[in-house]
Image (cartoon, rainbow over the protein chains, first blue to last red):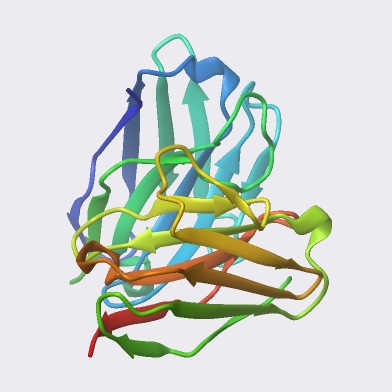
Length: 122
Length: 107
């Protein structure tokens, strides 16, 4: 059974940084592309970053390019999102999601964690 | 960037009725890389359909997807009480973008 567990969210002031983590189990983590998808309160879904199975390919939405950095440690079955220079509009639940099948480099998200809330407020 | 439009914004139906949700893309979706997700309040999204018409594992056959190019449809044959939720379409062939969602609520 696939399990993705996010952590690292919280309340942070504008301009500050956080590192979000996603611990994966129940999958051969090193074979799956991974994504971060966020949802602002009462709003829709936005894929903000993605990374290929081996970490060689990365994707960022324009809204976060230059401020967010996605990475992974396949030896620890863990995905990360470093979020810098936070803005109030970055307030959202951040979901970790995996691709549906091995070595998929598209944005299809087959399995999802329960999310971690990031609130940016002074 | 491919922009997705979903209609209607809200669909009010009774259990047992048929639901038809539309997703339209601003340009053709590569290889029918179109997915549908269901999200209930306080929960993460769940993948229902991928490749426009393939049901994900464990998804009941009352859910079906169709379409190609720029026009796609999610049909729920007979609504069950647990189907009242928000539904998002996503194209994943060119980066990945989501539609704004359709809320299916109880009439």
